[in-house]
Amino acid sequence: MHATKSLLDILQVHLRVGQWRNLIDRLPAAEAFDQFSSSSDNPDDYHFGRDPDGGKASAWTWCDLA
Image (cartoon, rainbow, N blue to C red; front, side, top):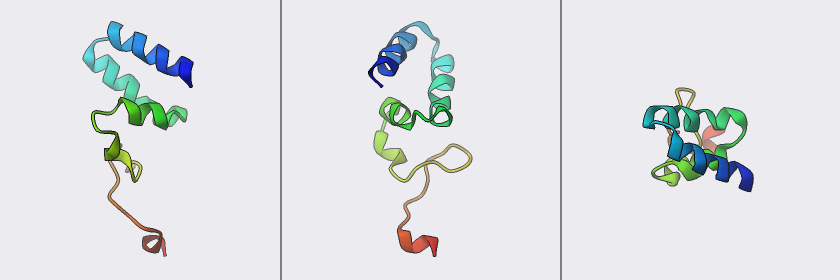
């Protein structure tokens, strides 16, 4: 994971803002949600995960799944 963080730091310096955002948005699909969350302006936004459209999921409890 440490190497991934270093790579992200390097890429952030060299990519344009739009390219950087596209790269960050692809991290969850690459099973790198921790890096995605830590790269967010507010990591707590994704405490409950993501909706299919990529936005933050609404708060839920286990009772909501029944």
